[in-house]
Image 1 (tube, rainbow, N blue to C red):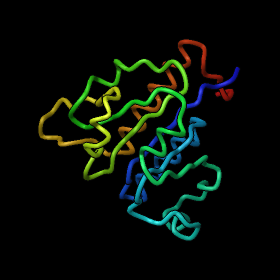
Image 2: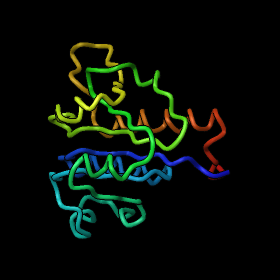
Image 3: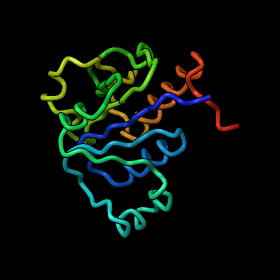
Length: 161
């Protein structure tokens, strides 16, 4: 069975280890990682090897100078994820090629992207003392929920596990 494409989009990520953990999630799920805008770190071989990312060369990665460039190149649903605004992520409906878009660790998504009117979701935080979840944790929650949704409707092939 063929898999529907899932895409994780990081807009101006700042922390290499978060991006590394997210790259590992993408590889584990067969998803494509899109890096948009200016990165807070280098992704040359020496830099990623220093961060312990010995699988980096196996991750499908596409870089885009701007979010508009990404949007113009993507044919599918685009969902935005923020820490406090939007509908609970469990209300999303992944039914085909989908981009799961996340902002930088300290700034979130820029207002220019939020103003596009794309569907907006969040992972709920039930204790107000917690300002936000780690970016890699949030991506993991959302990405595996998207995989589960695609499995339920028969659009996700299993790798035998």
